[in-house]
Length: 325
Image 1: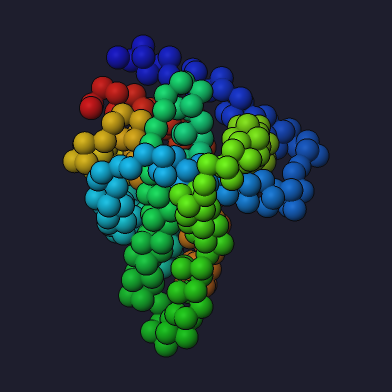
Image 2 (image 1 turned 30 degrees about the vertical axis):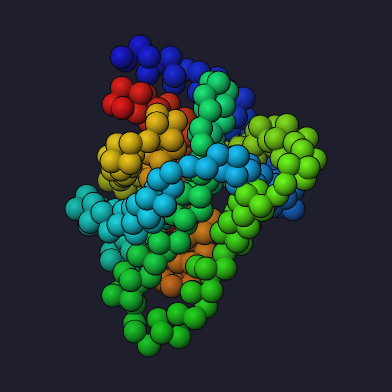
């Protein structure tokens, strides 16, 4: 069993997606002037969000699936519950105050589009197909975690100040650009006819992995730039950033078993539960908890949990579902 895990890990590490991430890390560590301009970075992100949403919707339109409603309801419930588990663990093993713990916890119930995309690429490069409806689970898990963070914010923030920020926060939650584009692209993929879909094969399908490689290069550079902040987090906080995705992944595994998902879909649900937001939730927490430290929740999510999931987590989660389902 351990041999198969080692094989999966080595295959994942030697994939172009991971190697470009490592290249970005090395570039940042040696202080190279390599960088991706912000405008190009945003364009790459928009492409990836639109492509993953559209491909998921198109796959769903080709296959009428039973049990999708149950998956979406359970995914939403998991996204709402996981932040409370994260908060509880943070208070046990770290000295982070309630305000910052609330902000951090919200990140660990939401999802990472890039981690999910890397997981789907791992499956595709292994010749393993998966159902497109998992993209709907990705989309629906963005906001409940933010709402959980909102409840924690209401408990620990001053009520008057929080009430004043509430309309802006709700707008940020429900009209977040990532959520709107992902859900919109998914719906377009479901509704588009075959003629329109054929015309997008050369745009949304063929270049996808190459675009992801360049995006992962930038992510490696960003993580390297935050390395000094990672050291400042403290040992117990770093341990949380590694243990929490494992706990969430096991919970996701239990949910996948309950839903009787196949191994590829189960692996993607585990990845969704184990992943951590570093785009949508930070934007919401800046409004809900302006006194919380971005240097804690952003560094922890992007600098610790994200690289752990990308390099170690993805093959580990797939190995888990193959031996457990």
